[in-house]
Length: 322
Image 1 (cartoon, one colour):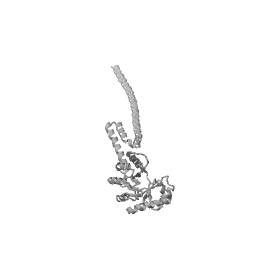
Image 2: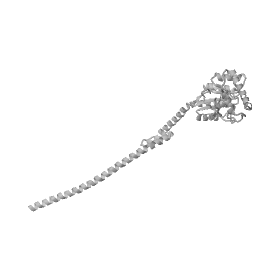
Image 3: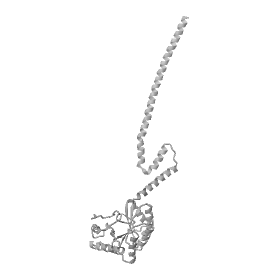
Image 4: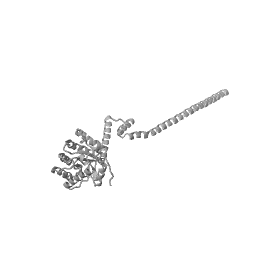
């Protein structure tokens, strides 16, 4: 019986020992897995933090790309949507781009609001002066006429009409004969006094503005253009050249469309445009293209004005005002 009890005790002790050893082994395995699990958990956390940090750093660069190409903002926006998983149809893309284009056109028109355009006509009066005045009246536009000296009744009526309808009446010499007026300083100012007196006698308005035949940049004058310009300034007159032109005096057979495009091209690059055109008797094409030119200028939302005391000077040869 005792032997049986001893054997039982040994079995129990052996089982306890086995169980204890098993538990030790089991705990060791659990500890190993816990360490490995912790290691992988920490590794995953580091990986996630690295991704987030990388995205945060790259974010400003993506924004910079959008700012650099304003004309492509619509395209960049669509790309961002596609990358985020949203689907954008081709029609939606086209609508976005169209809206962006319209916005750019509106901005261009808005920029043109501050542009000033001064239409000037040289070499009149003639039958075409009357036609030009009719067109300007129809479109409610005022311009500047640099006239030459003519003493017939029709010409005098044109001088008067220019003034009465709110246009600026300017001088363009009396004779318009280059070889005479540019022969000497004395000859020039004799001619100047003659045209100034004629216009004052006919209209009662003393003319102030002058345009040299051929402009101050002409190469025909035997006298220094700077000295003539200085002499005009001392006599209280203001001279204007031009920085835009239709090309109606170039000697080339330009189409109406070419003449209009010449003007618009120059107007686009200047905030103040003084446009050279002619209303002499042979300038029929200038008259024909004028309505279309006025329509396009009005569509551009520019201010069309006659030359006055507020007009910025446009001069090829400059002199100090004393």
